[in-house]
Image (cartoon, rainbow, N blue to C red):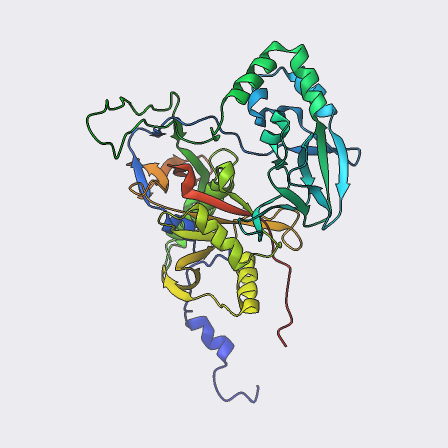
Length: 460
């Protein structure tokens, strides 16, 4: 016998039930990108973007690699120079070997305006700024350049003075190529010589610009009007549906015996759908072929001026996507770093409610957080990027793509197909999410690169 006078809680729980939650998943995020994109239903599985004809455009980067601790130019990337696009691989390898390494320190002048520009500079590592003197002698910043960018191709090719001065913002390393190496290459290869002559004969043609339409305006009398037509690209880009896919397996004894009060198949499929959607958002941002970060046009890339994301940097992005900007998108740590810089300057960003959540805004444009935005060199001390986009088909912006209708669809663009029961009594379900994204016009997207998030300030 014991001294117990009543039923114990442990014993009583054998007759009681528990209040249960549905399965929780830490990896679920708000997925603001999927909610912000307007989705276009694609009938035939392929989405073709027809554009007005433009002049050939590369990615405005000459990549480098480390060879025994020293940077070296990747020969194939020398095709970023317009007159080397058809050059032989052996010639490009020879030209890449002619680059010399030039280290520099913060504050060092790399080029002076008005001086003869006899070397092509490729920034292998570091940041520099281009500056000019304004109309009244004031100092003005033209652009900040970083890893992989080069200057000044036109002045170097023509043998003319560089039209600005370049000052290093950080310590770094550049690779330089003398004009004599290009001259020697042209003397030995007629193809390169012809391409170079064609380049020198075209003044004022900007790579990536649309072919002009001849128009007349403001005339008096009865002049002959110009005739014209708007030419299209010969090979417009086509976007095919990509997918995220898995096979969900549920044993029949589990679904038969342990299906209440929570449906096991529904719970399993719900978590799998969330995992597929998370992968979908990551692919839309980072896929090497169609990811938004990898589809920003050269003229739409901005370098962070001081490393930390500042109001000036985001204002510069807004000058690139000034026609109906829709959303910034950045890693939460980058948004926090931007907020610190705003606080430091006494201009705290306005908070507005979008998608049911309080979000920071800048100039009225919401900053959407996403943990899918990558860091280069590690999330602790590495650098990240901030994206700005215009969205919508009518606005010639960024759109999401998905099939108009698929069999066994459980959500738009996502199917759950029963594959049957195997000999072990396991039911398999093929779960597939079909998607893609398209940038309709290049100026719908801009990116701030080399953003540092580890700078903090003492406000006391």
